[in-house]
Image (cartoon, rainbow over all chains, first blue to last red; front, side, top):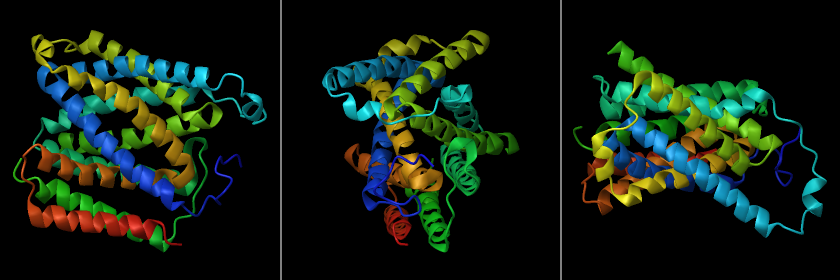
Length: 170
Length: 139
């Protein structure tokens, strides 16, 4: 197994990592607010296209900065042997891009925004549980415990409360 | 109705599928490189979709405030963090904690921008999410 988290066994989650995941949700809130504003003016396809275009440039800038910063201290990194990525691993962006189209379809259907968010979470949980149980697409398998299911139920219920009742009438 | 339900559920499946694939790519490259490929491949896909079904550009686009164009830059960091996280805490933990965080910070954003959230549901929802997050780290 080539798990890049040597300080922890794969089954035990580092609390810091869980906190970072929670914080990255805040990043998503801001990002959705920005892209939503762009979509309000120019439509969802324009917003997503623009976000991907500016994101591509931003990623190149970040990579260039990292390359400059890490000049001359390569020794540690080159020792780490990495397996080549299969071609399909480059296609994550296709599925991400198609998400925009499905989301705008459902938001404009009787499902509306709150239903889209709630059902979207259900879809994410369904895929993730199967992905963890079977180790789909080259990531490691994780045996789910009773605690995991309890945590899934609590977070899903809390999210559903906020989505369906917390933001007032849509 | 059933069409909308399937579209919404399918969008959720695609979000997690994308994170799983990007996570695999990050193992062979790095989270930031995986995020770069995610964006450039997504850009190509959306360009193709725009050429086929149209709707890529509309008149209103020029009225959007400049700050709204920062979403893509945040997206790079967000996708990179997702790839970094999924190989460490798994797909389920990542999906739930990111969504939980999104909703809790969403309430904060609502308060800042003057949208009044429904207090009982929001407060109870936050308590449930935090309890679930706490349970996720017990073994």
